Amino acid sequence: MSQEAGLAVRQVTVTYRNGNTALRDASFAVPVGSIAALVGVNGSGKSTLFKAIMGFVPLARGAVTVLGGTIQEALKRNQIAYVPQSEEVDWTFPVLVEDVVMMGRYGRMNFLRIPKQADRDRVDTALTRVGMQDFRKRQIGELSGGQKKRVFLARALAQEGKVILLDEPFTGVDVKTEEAIIDLLTALREEGCIMLVSTHNLGSVPRFCDRAVLINRTVLASGPTREVFTHDNLERAFGGVLRQFTLGGTDLHDDEDERRVTVLTDDEHPFVIYGDEQRKAAADPSGEKP
Ligand SMILES: Nc1ncnc2c1ncn2[C@@H]1O[C@H](COP(=O)(O)OP(=O)(O)OP(=O)(O)O)[C@@H](O)[C@H]1O
Image 1 (spheres, rainbow, N blue to C red):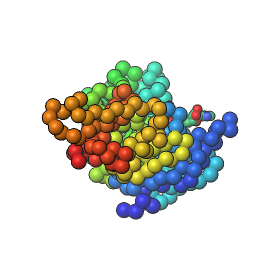
Image 2 (image 1 turned 90 degrees about the vertical axis):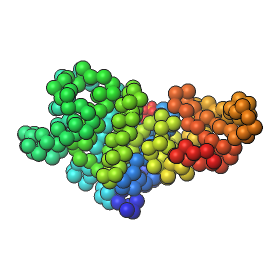
Image 3 (image 1 turned 30 degrees about the horizontal axis):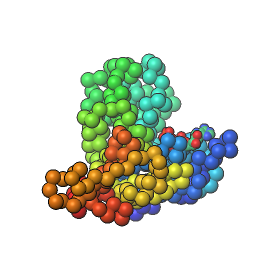
Image 4 (image 1 turned 180 degrees about the vertical axis):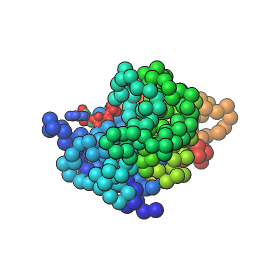
């Protein structure tokens, strides 16, 4: 399918009311049926970009199109679902898990918000898909970090949005939950969803994101992950924030093997580049050595 029909951000500039331009001339596209990682340092404009796509901040310049239409049209059709960062949610608010997921249906109800059977069925399916059926009567504040994430994913599923924005979905979740989330996103990709996932977890990006957008107040690089996730691009995006070291010779091998391995890391989620031609080599998502 053409990129035109997916999510397209064209020359977008966002200036906040205090005059701060958080994003300048940002352009990229994500086709239907793909997962794109949105990667950048703190303050690089990831949340601002999400807000721009959701129509929460006015664009000083440029345009965003969703499935060929404007943001307003997409919002009216409930096409954009959002999974927030944990810090954005008031967990003391007394609401049950099933009610949070039902919120995903609000846009499809009339102003009285009385759920129909079809809405309840969608909520059931969404809770089952994220493995949270047994917790449906729990207060949202009484869940673990990973369980809370799954509930908000279920809300996005119940909404049936074609475009799903996920803000740091792996922060504070264990490896098993991370795997479960990745499996779910991969299944949604097969169903034709467009996902934009902000993450600091560099190591996992080539594993499940077919595309990547590197950002620092503008889009530095975007496209297929294997083309974007290069040593040079990551260095441009992260500068001194990342540590880099190369292992080779007797540090890595106990024989004559001359291959080397370079690790780029924020000390939490290392991104590993195999081979000697690191500066030219694109990351190989299969993890195979050259
Ligand atoms: N409401 C606002 N008014 C003015 N400036 C803002 C506002 N929100 C964010 N900014 C600024 O815009 C820039 C981009 O911030 P943004 O929150 O989009 O970054 P981010 O990449 O999401 O950061 P993080 O990884 O820390 O969540 C920062 O310099 C920030 O201080």
